[in-house]
Amino acid sequence: MQASTESSANTKQLHSGPLDGLLGYHLRRVQGAAFHHFATYLKHHGITPGQLGLLVLIHCNPGVSQSALAKEIGVERSTLGEFIDRFENQKLVERRPSPSDRRIHAIHATKRGRRFLEQVMPDVEAHEQEFSKPLSARELKTLIGLLKRLVAQ
Amino acid sequence: MQASTESSANTKQLHSGPLDGLLGYHLRRVQGAAFHHFATYLKHHGITPGQLGLLVLIHCNPGVSQSALAKEIGVERSTLGEFIDRFENQKLVERRPSPSDRRIHAIHATKRGRRFLEQVMPDVEAHEQEFSKPLSARELKTLIGLLKRLVAQ
DNA sequence: TATTGTTATACTCTATAACTATA
DNA sequence: TATAGTTATAGAGTATAACAATA
Image 1 (spheres, chains in turn purple, orange, cyan, yellow):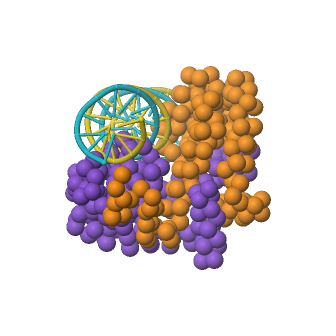
Image 2 (cartoon, helix red, strand yellow; image 1 turned 30 degrees about the horizontal axis):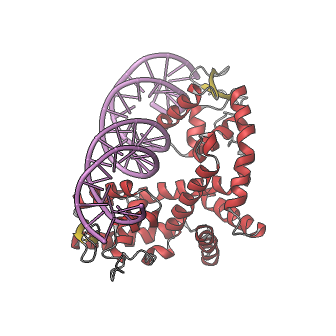
Image 3 (cartoon, protein in one colour; image 1 turned 90 degrees about the vertical axis):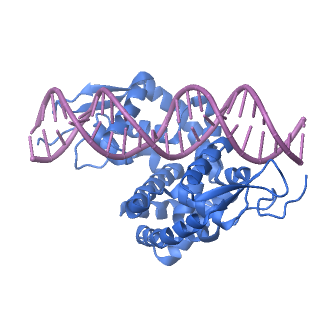
């Protein structure tokens, strides 16, 4: 193979130019890397980070409404409804009538959903451990703290 | 409206349980918040953070191959090809034959693409400024530094 | 043989708009 | 009127697999 004189050469890494100073760019990159790492580590469970987060949220907030979940994770109600549809098809969660408001579907994790979480969470911990290995415990704590402050606004 | 005794009450925020200690969870949340903020700030430009990043990369690496771009942003070649298709339809970039390797499409920003970037970048800067406001300049630098180390691995 | 790029296919994520039921 | 949820529709993002051209 001929060495290219253009910037497309295989061995050279690309210039990131003005992207290098942009928080949003690095956020995207790291989040992408974390997604791929998660997918590799938890392939056999067939779940994505977003799905896992939603399922944990449901588990920790029994009877929560779809609207509250949508607001929490920052998606539209219609989008959230689809996520719940899929979980319901997989028998991981169920919609129950709310005792206090007949418009509301109270969302609950099923026994199967809880068992699933018990099986998955150790692998999630292992993935986290491995992915965050470049940072010390203290640095990881600092990082999470800074990230939290960006969402709190 | 009746106050609910369940955790779905409107005013209560949800418990995040084991998610609270997970870097991946916070990464997702912040990245989602940044995406929405970007979309609001740059609505009139009709571009997403991912598209902008790719266009800047092309602009800063004239003649880069699709494979190199795919590798850089972490997507498959087929996916990247679609992004280039769209940019080409919008006349923002063009595929040129590579002088050294006839398999390669050398990707270049068009004049229109460069003008577009000139118009957009000031708004990107403004969005960044606003979004990262909860952090001091020093904290922002620390944050970006920590994020970079997670991708470098 | 390995790499670059394309095409076909399919699934997930996501939003908007219009709708029904309930508050 | 406002809120909760559903449905229909559409587009973006993404991957896999099979392929042609070139190295």
